[in-house]
Amino acid sequence: MPPQSTGMTAADPVPAPTALPDVAPFAQWLGLVTETAAEGRAVLRLAPRKELLNRRGAIHGGVLASMLDSAMARASRTLDGVEELGGTTDLHVQYMQPAEGELQVSAWVAHAAQTLVFCRAEIRDAADRLVASGTASLRIRRKRGQWSP
Image (cartoon, rainbow, N blue to C red; front, side):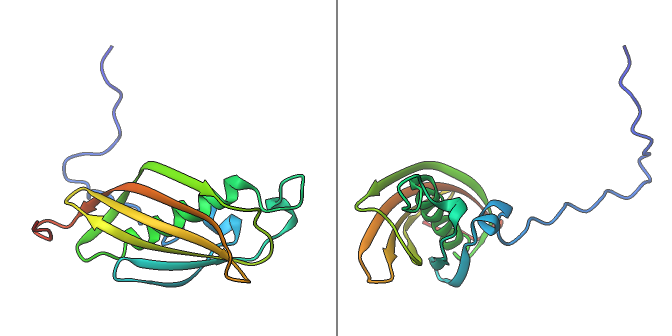
């Protein structure tokens, strides 16, 4: 069976790529707010709401993992020459204690290679208690000629 025609000819302009949003829709739904993001670091804040709680009334562990992942991704995108994030390839989370109240996650790039970055992050509560920490490796795409070891 022959392929179906798209209706476009070689003379038709190529549509521009769709721009990706600065913040993922899921992170927006969670309520993550970026406080700072620059030079391989990011700080995000989360105000809890009922939908984010587990049955014991603490913030669900999946929300904490998403906070860590989102902050590390945001930090990665601030590196010089990074054109786009390709996604998280590994995420490790350590939960220290139940999380309640407003939370802040701080993330930083520990090492950057040509196509991968390695990050660390910590979540602290309003009393500055360490609630959870994490590490991740994330795939990145750099602008051509923007990396040297």
